[in-house]
Image 1: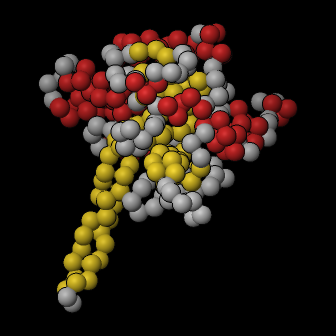
Image 2 (image 1 turned 30 degrees about the vertical axis):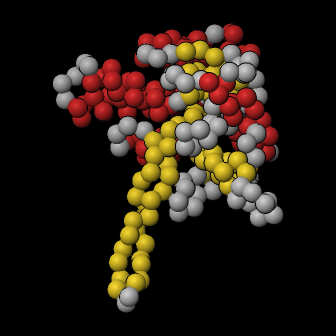
Length: 238
């Protein structure tokens, strides 16, 4: 090893781009948000792209595991991929479901199929997470999960009711823990009430609250940010 090969950690961090999961309810505008990303290409894994009817973003349809693999081989190895700064996937939840359907057709035991699906999906996520010089936007479906219990006092009696939290959805149990843990940002897109604004506005939540899971591992984003990925990536990289 040559000490001259050492580089500032900040230089290495900026080399890798911003890796994000973005989730929200159906109709919240997750897919059109890709239009705001820098030089994006879109991998479409589920039908229903009417919200992108006026978009000029290059997109590739992949509704089978084989086509998904073909796209990632192209994106990770071809010179043409240098034309894009952002890879958006709509959706990583559906990729997991496509892989699960294939695994259920190959193995007899359901637990084995779910384990294989988790392993294959995490392999995709890890490969993309460590891909240099690219922003990654993984759109995910929204699920609701119990997140502890709250104490309710009524008529002198104490009861405990579950606190339900919105989180990215994946089939099975493993991915619901591993996938959000991997990515720098987990962002929730929805209508948000902001002080000083007369009406709720569409925004990306970056900080967790009891009802919504979110995370800004980079630490320099506001609690909510405007739905502009180019601006958000620039701010995150500062």
